[in-house]
Image 1 (cartoon, rainbow, N blue to C red):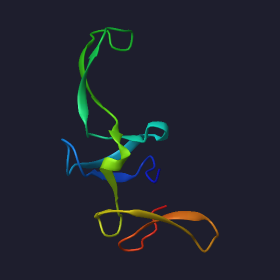
Image 2 (cartoon, rainbow, N blue to C red):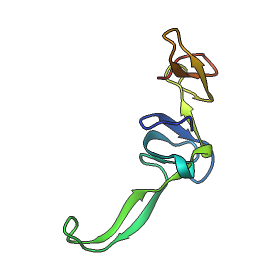
Image 3 (cartoon, rainbow, N blue to C red):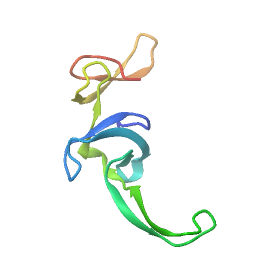
Image 4 (cartoon, rainbow, N blue to C red):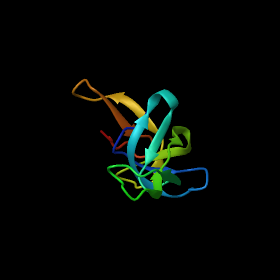
Length: 103
């Protein structure tokens, strides 16, 4: 999976098409990502010690990772990600459009 926690991504398909946000959590086993402020669903919460009132909460639900693209820092567009070996002999991710290193 080429998406990491903390990346800025844009949703390409689904009900939140065009929205962007920061990746809060990555679930590689299910190929899913949770993005801040995107794909919000209502969750009915029973009263507990942390939330004595209970009620209906809005939470971010996971999206399939194939429905999002990483936003490049330099060109500020959704882009595909490639891997290459840098001068320091370490594997880095880069923007396929402008060549900017993302890591």
